[in-house]
Length: 250
Length: 235
Image 1 (tube, each protein chain N blue to C red):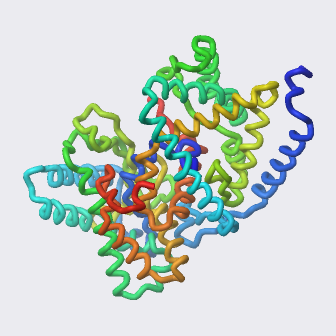
Image 2 (image 1 turned 135 degrees about the vertical axis):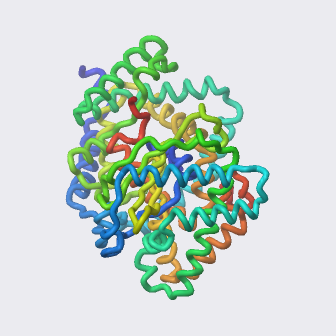
Image 3 (image 1 turned 90 degrees about the vertical axis):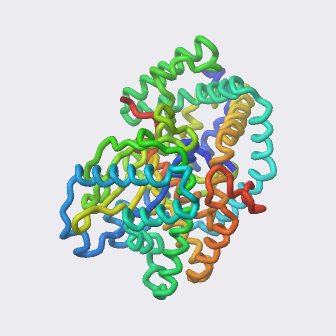
């Protein structure tokens, strides 16, 4: 126990906890922007974005990073890497994140989804170290994170936050990211950090490559790309929280 | 940038396509008097969808005629003024009558450029109503669920996307106030985006209209990258 834990200095964990608590505190007390009259009737709230100026700045940097590095890499990857290999990249990255997804399934009391995640992790890891997804039909993949868990327990999103590299987020969801990092067994395995970072990077490139046309479409006809991305983030997040974003069970 | 942070990824592609619009603020008394039912709403969407497929998918009809038919369907099926009012929000109230007309005009042309090409090759089996119920978020509306083929994958067997049409009863009929695909409503998206754009232009609606006209001239709304003529279109 002491050995696998030793990969992570206590100070680092304490620091992460402090940040998480700080953000969660903000999230819990931040009041959502009240909609006006009719909007409330529709269950619609204007995004709360008090940090719009710095957010736009980070958004622009992320956009430049995307244009200069991420997108060219993704285009190259998309062109040269065979589909089977691309699928294995995605499977492997998803499998690595299974423990975190499982923990959040359980936190939310979603037993059927927890069963899906556990079965996927068990079978795919044993048969192929996660490079192949052989139970997708019976146990389809879904995403889950601590930001969603907080939302299920009624924590407000707080305010909109654009994270460097990671992109659109919120006070609650950024705090959730920190907790997910703490929930990830790999965080505590000595020497696994490189694997973890490499997998995240590969997953990012893979996702970007799978969405080349989509992102071009979303961007090309927008009159305010920042505002559009913010609105889409909130709506997709809401669908993810309600678990209506994935494949539906028949 | 990892725009695709979580799950709003591939499904959004479709959303971006399928999004039309509107959650209309239901004016006092406007819809209150009208009676409706989930079945009636479903029939309305069913019949409008069949008309759209019939009229807009025919290759032998000249482009200009298809365009006119599309505009007719828009006027017939959508609460365009209510949608415009919702999308512009507080800026609608300060807009002059002329600005309102100009916005609605450019808005319709945006929708035409975006959606008319998608009807190519669609058959009746590519648009199916699967159910209707009172809208969970707004009980005075009905949410009609449909399965729609992805563009380019028509013919019945291809993967379908769930599109939810939010309609409100009117005197003797129904009209569409919002379209949602995979959790994303274009009314809400556009409201957020347009309001931000107008605000950044110092509250000037003319500026938004000019930007929309620019996009139209560049064909930016055309699907499948057809409109990718602008230098910034493929960033």
